[in-house]
Amino acid sequence: MNKKTISTAIAIIIILCVFGYEYVLKEQESTEIIKQGQTVKDDTNEYFLPTSTTGQIIHHEGYSLSYSEPHEQAEWVAYELKKSHLANTNFKRPYFEIDKAVKTKAAHWRNYKQSGYDRGHLCPAGDKRYSQEAHDETFLTSNISPQKHDFNSGIWNTLEQKVRYWARKYDGVFVVTGGVLNGTMKTIGDEKVSVPNQFYKVLIDNNIGKTKMIAFLMPHKNSKRPLYEFVVSVDEIEELTGIDFFSELEDSIENTLESSSSYKGWSFN
Image 1 (spheres, one colour):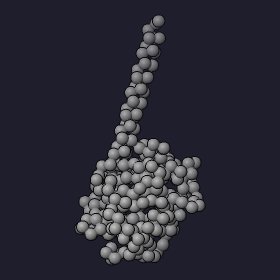
Image 2: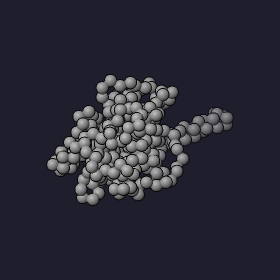
Image 3: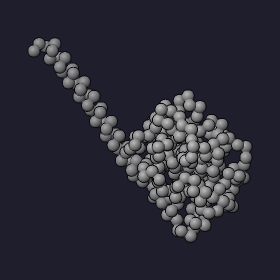
Image 4: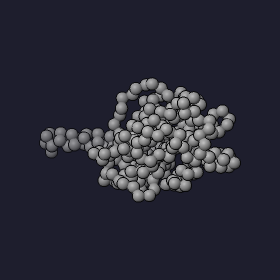
């Protein structure tokens, strides 16, 4: 074997070793992401998480979600929004990434390209500006749902801002949000991501010893109507979605609060 042949063989071995090492690192990273996605990082989150109709709950640093593979999005995203989370930090907007913690594989962001729909955050990036990691993980594709732009930037954005107002006023609220994934829905992209006809948001405040709830159900279109006109009972959203919210609450409290569509105690000023 001449020197040229030996040199070529050595070069090939080095290249294979480099690629092999990078593959092992990627596999370790993916395993760690999935491992993190199976760990509840906050007792409050664990206590207030809804049931999953899909059996696939993922936990991230700043939020948890139940992923619906048939609809290629979360049926709910849940997180605690504390007053201390509401920072004014402006992190650079990252690219959307596929959530590797979803075992059935989360939808690709390309499904939304030229679809006419926004990649609508369920847990808003604006709620997670207290750290770079918490902010950036809101750009995982498991945390987005197709939303019309005027809805996303209109009435839905108004509701998100009101949630931040309540988080400041009441020193934190727990939020559950998602699209209603049933009925006849349009789909987008090669993976047929469902476009919800309605979106909901459910809040619970348990900070001062007296628990209160409020729930919103919005048609997927912009509106000039005041927010309180979208208030419904939690029971109505449970009936639409099949999801059981706040089952860890004492039954008498849960039944009373979830059957009410009153917004008494929630300031809309």
